[in-house]
Image (cartoon, rainbow, N blue to C red):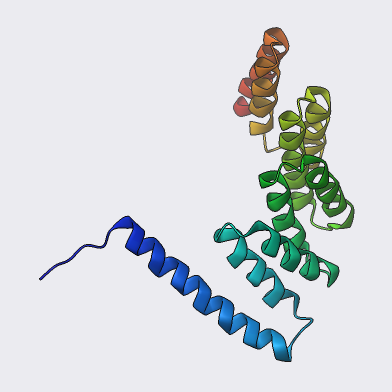
Length: 171
C-alpha cells in the first residue's frame, strides 16, 4: 500500500537527519577541534534549522581558523538578523583576501546588493562598476545597474544602462 507523508512529517525527517549529522560532526570535532570544515558544516546545519545564533558561533570559529566559506555564510546570518553593516564589512574582508578575480567580481556584486538594501544607490553602482572592470564579459551587470536606478526613481539613467546592456550583447 502506497502512503504519502505530510509536509510536517517530511520536515521532521529532515530535522532528524540534520540532528543525526550534527551529532556525527560534534563527535568528530572532539578529535579535531580546529577543523574549519567541521565547524563550518555545523554552522550550515544550524543555519538550515533556523538556529542563527548557533550558526554564527560555528561560522565565526571556522572563520577564525581561515575559512572564507564560513565568512560568506556569516554574511547570510548577518543579513537574516538585520545586521547589514556587519555583512558589508565581511564582504569587504573577502574582497581584500580573495585571489581569484572572478570571485572578487562576485563579491562586488554581492556588496552592491547590500548597498541597494541599505538604499545607497551610488555605492551600489560603484560596486557594480568594479565588478565590470574585473569581468567586462558579465554584461548582465548593466541590467542590474538599470534596475537599481529605476527602483530609485532614476528612469533616464536606468534606460542608459539598458542601452549599454543591449549594445554589449551585440559584441
